[in-house]
Length: 347
Image (tube, rainbow, N blue to C red):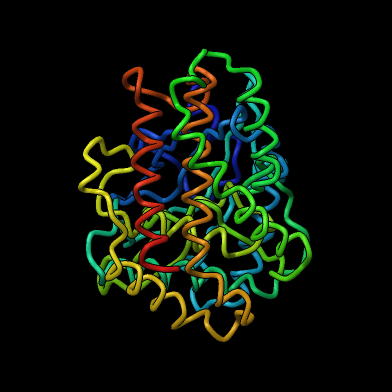
């Protein structure tokens, strides 16, 4: 089916005149839908990746229900939350004749995003953005369907890790003994953190799970934060996973796969700016235990990423796309350098 035939399946208020591709998505394919009489897009059409997200119907149900909850709490629901457009049959997605899943939402006008946070000011804005999302869903009590199995569950990751070492699919275990030691020396510490969640010491909350700054919209005119977007990975977890994921990306002075480890450190200035922005909005909603573990959250998520990159290298590079044979090992070492910098500054 053509994109024009696909968009015609949705209950649009205005007639489409042009469909343009928006960027090059790593997971989903996104298109801008322009309508007659307007130069700015009116809708976003998106092909949802059903390989990465096997349960697209549940994912769309999550997005629609949480967005409707947020819409009741904001002053401008057309700009401060996502608005899912159903099909003409009332479904939240359309499955085409090739078995591909498509969804449509309103385009939020006069908005902008940032590719990365390169200043403390942007880091603070990112912290405020995540906190605003967490605050708006803090009273959402309906269960959110888990879209990705075992997400941030380090106990489950260790089961994968142990099997990976046993299997040694690419014959690389003998060459990464030092790196394996990095993982094993912190196993008990990471499990202790996850056990606190399992025992209920951290509340179960709605989490975003992809907290980079590009997933938050800001007003193009005055720069104020509008809303969180890309809600595909929402689920129920501890919000410390969201904070830790943000700290891993916002505070790194180098690249995630930087071969020059001298460039990789945790910027304390960026850390303080992000956490300060987050707590300025969400501080009163956190438990004392959650506040206490904010510094460790960054170490936990960074450690998890060290483990996943190294495990993929040991497995023969089956999960992450690589640009050269040692890419996953370079990623492992860069993330480990970030982890040790966090440990040095935050413990």
